[in-house]
Image (cartoon, rainbow, N blue to C red; front, side, top):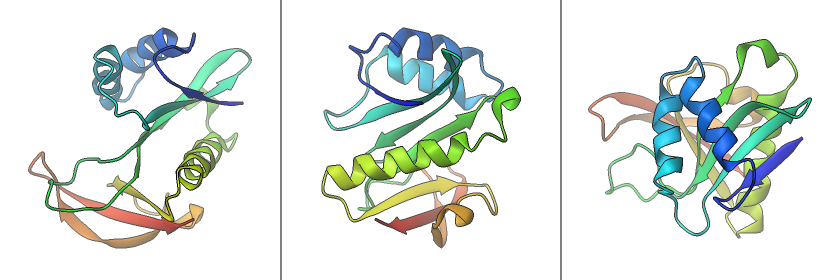
Length: 146
């Protein structure tokens, strides 16, 4: 099951705990962003739930790690599925839910910044190119028509 969260959702604080203790170092960044409720009104955290436990998460946001001069929007970010829950198509379900949320908000395209090779292409994303990030690194920008 995929749950779409705002800070009022009962899963919000459980997701903060899950994110800050997950094996991916970016989880701590998401946990802090959630603690600070650093989200625009239309942005959301999405979680995958299996057996009444959080199995993974992602975000739906207006911006990601691109410098402000780029006007790409919206983005799927912080996609993570717990290692013991992989192989259950949870990444695909999270991505699909974020795409549906984007469509419901009137967007016709959704984006992802990632260093992963071969992951997003299998979900219908096309690589637009390599872009410098606000962190001084370079990542791939992917887009998918909705």
